Image 1: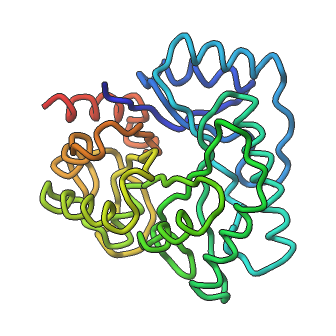
Image 2: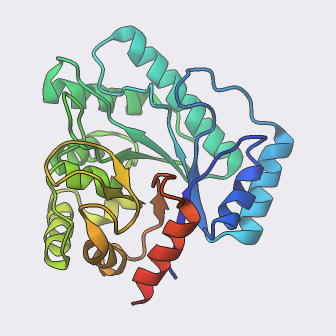
Length: 277
């Protein structure tokens, strides 16, 4: 079964996320637990958490993923930002436990002068300080690799997965990988990238794929998402991503734009059509 969904809003209460997912034809998905632009997490009501868990169990294949705040920077050498990032991530894994969500997804962030080795060590140290509840896993996400941001190379992800005391997984973003230089635009290119990821990180550590096309060419380090099939990856690459034996059973989560009269529902339908061809 194809597991496809999108990042949906929790406006009005987290319990509303399930209905929004169903409205676009999704059967799994992703949420922010609060505004990703602020540190304040607010509170999740017991009623909302119960509604979310019950409706998810009744209507969706799952899983759900929590996407951490954009402010979180695991790689930072700055003590104050590290402390805020640690606190925010602790609140996210606790919220995941409360909501019955399996995964909390996070970007490694930017080392801002600490260097690649220092940044990776910083990220590992933050993850190792988390008190992660049973049934919850942190996923480190691949990045487009601009500036001093880490996660653009598979080796960065592998070093975090291997270096943490916690069991940590990976979330791959197709637009980010493509922007970072991993070609996905043809079936042959997808096969090569899948093989490289398996060799460097290991498919057994992959738990989610953000399915996004790219408005920019491969290797540009520019992170701008396009509708599925409309970007530089295109339908041929997307079809192979969805059907590759090592990736096809993953949950695919859309973060595609709302533009040109199309939003998530169009992209879900298009993905389903590509998967069935």
